[in-house]
Length: 92
Image 1 (cartoon, rainbow, N blue to C red):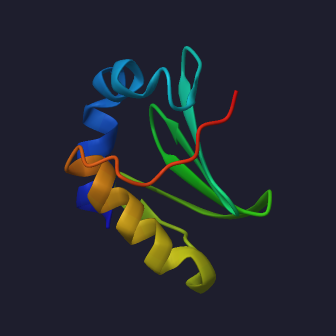
Image 2 (spheres, rainbow, N blue to C red):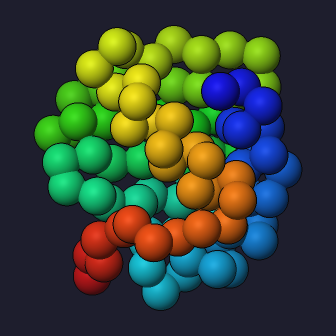
């Protein structure tokens, strides 16, 4: 999963441009809502939450994801790393 995270993090600025109308994009983070999951992509790591409860992070060389979020996180990382954005919720 760390390799997928590395690819997402390498493309942070591109992702921010691509998702600016579909996610909350700040200077140093992108927040994606897929109720009940929230994904926060930062420049150095990707944090995962379920119902606003923190369930771990993944980044270059580390993975602290809980068992509860691991599979969903893998799917999101594959999608983000492959630039496939079929699943997300718009929040304005």
